[in-house]
Image (cartoon, rainbow, N blue to C red; front, top):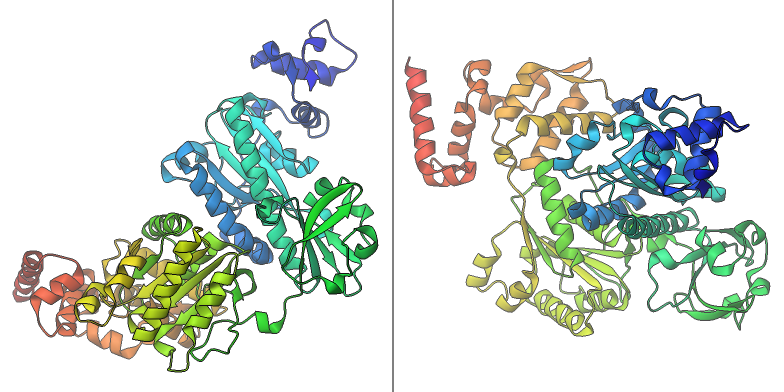
Length: 623
């Protein structure tokens, strides 16, 4: 701590110190007697090294979309691991008006979660996705100062150097990566000061989140190495309480996570190159330790527990559990595969559904995800699994429609229960047979009796499960067990921002096919916007890929779209019909065999409303 009172007498021999004392008095900090040393040192750098004036600190720069895309692409592995933790932290703090973000080593906010009702206050002070927060340009701030000193930082209110950001409270912690370098910064910001006790509590939560991300990323970086996971108590330890040590095939220490230094009381760089069997008292040779079983470990008078993890193999990186299971079915770690086959467009409706689903699964409740064919149920379910189970959980993905008589579901389910933390995703659940239903019911009962929410279950269904129960095709007791929570994904035609969905998915698909500069002309845009999309998101993405693949110039023309789609919607003047709802209604009526009641339900409107629209369109056509 830096004593403000010492600078009150007349001018000292240090003009920078005098200026800091003057700033403290002007901000009403003189009564506190002390200024945190981290803040005082940062202010000195702002004055002496950066030549910043408190009232002229520039607004944070915001990167362009292309710059953000390049930066996020370079950090893809880290972001896949950090995203579930950022989401978990946000859900924990959302009721307290906090923003949660993850910044790059350059101070760029890459991951950004904030409740929309607080976003305006923060945006007014430059806190935005893609904003760049360095100490050199923005003065003393949570992200920039954390990067500068490599330690956790709390910058509260008027401790910010810049006048414009003095209403913010920033609580940050670094995430270390390769060679002990800062890989990112986890940041929690609020537009209010909060009391000192609450800030300490939140700071501790932030530091634990940073260690979870660091340990997950360490495991990713060293997945081809043997690993010792150190902790004080293996039964109760959270990922945030682990220290991780990577070993080569000869047992030499290659690297270690930052928390190892705290557990062992020795700097990490003093461990590198040492032989683990000689450095630690393991009571046996490394080769005699059974993987994933905790053993006692002594070091410098301390007793810890260690768990040996073996290198990732090709066999462990299985994409799915196939229909015909081997006697020992493979289990897929979440962090070793691309869980989301297609980039999920997260609009406000999807974001709200994801938040709700994540809360339900985190509470240990089974989840049913329903929706029409092609509405994005599988991508949604996998995203929920990744958010809830992160890098340490395991995912078992089963296509129930692909199971056969030889499929040993009981063995798969028993393997799930044997894992400390796993998520079972049942795709096309409405196709599961009687044996599968019986095995799943036994699994849910065993997990309940175990008394811990170790197993997540997400069932994906396109059909009406209540109707299946009435028809005798689904056990009622199984549906009751599964129905802990339900998420119904809307049909694409009912999306209130269909134009936005088309625009965003067009950008995603164009980038994926290596044509990021491609444009969508007005006529094909109108066709896409007023088509009724019976195949939902899947059909839209297929149509976009079709058009992008055929495009040779700089734009998508009408003849690049699938012919059947254009034929259906453009039998009369394209522009006139597409600007109204006539084409969509006509196509939906044909799709439902002319039945007005079914068509009204299909379009998400009342029958009276549909009749009125039909009569209006008919009257217009007769004019």
